Length: 594
Image (cartoon, rainbow, N blue to C red):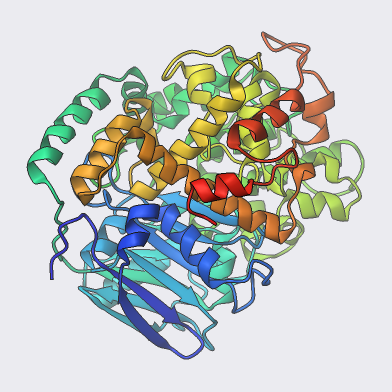
């Protein structure tokens, strides 16, 4: 029966150990309280799994989940989420990706797929209009992401099928491995690809053309037009269309918060050479976008006769300024190599940056040096294949630095490397880093939006006043957006009322801005509870020592460090948690978690 609420209506529970699949209806209370995406993954894992299991054991659970707005034709409604216990740092992680795969999972008849156990041989899951089947993937094992994707499309004779898969990095259980869909779209960070590799799952293939119907078409059409106008008129969205996410390179550098040489400084003199503007002038062929996208922020570039999608701002920074490299072609090719191998294009180069500083300081006698682009692509390949010096880095900077006696040189939070913004010049964003439920992260609470870009209003990045409340709101807001199936970039133009109206018209649920944010808060607190059971404490809600004690030396933030207190204590207070960062019984009852 066709669903009239934006959902496909089914969840596939896949027992890899026995090879059996149980297809169940998507519970109404799960939809209402958690929406989809990150919400579904967080709730399903919390209910079905002991938080103390080994992430690479059969007992870990892995969830693919779309949201109610995914694939409905709502502008920027294209996203899906993977969730699991991270092998990188044991958190209950989620990673978001776009493209067309999330839409096609729903057209195949499913809101979510839940993997449990471990297969005795390589397999892939085939989804087609309400049916699910495990098939042998032995012939695809060992292929890179591009070869795997192309082989499935050819072998199945179905050019409309969509594929999410792991590459060699996931097969070899690199803790930097991610899941790649649509050839070049990454659900990155936290080692999710290693979990699929440990389960011998090579891919999920989705096809079919089932209807996705909303609850109130007339109301949804009105809301669609309202948000379409807001998106088209928004200056940030216009800049993303013109230059992609790499438009941030010059902006962040001009604010002296572009981490350089493993966060030793925050300004890169040659940043212009790797900027979105330079990309547009030289290697850009065309824009690309996800399903139903009207912003089209992705770049399709040609380098040395090869055409691929990407890269985004984060890997451009990580392979560029943070390694002291200004050769745009090398930066692009290194990012592409990550996609082919199924590697996190933030964690891979930040591990390399850590090794470069270790070499610079004489703590190791081999490995790359800052500014040297020669051999970079080969090193990325070694990381993905666990070969040579790359094998030293394939589990991330923290384990590498700790093994060599200097964990302080890993620029990570909860063992996950920080992305492309120096928090010494961003007090709110630093708090978001420190308290992120999946470790060092920017998209779990993008305080760059108000502190740098001025959306929804411009905040002074150097002050602490009111920042705890802003961080809490952004974190809850992002969790709800991830659950809804909308792209986070839509939040540059849309507010909580817009998202609530979109979701309500799609699902038929009674939602306003406050109740939409409450769903996000419920998801955030449930992830937090999982992490507390794993063993995370207040001591882990912090930043690397360098960012607390070594002031920046240039520009507007000169002389500043990140100020942990009173920011952290105020954050716990506004969250309704106790002084140790534990959600109180009152807060849990308020959210229906107790």
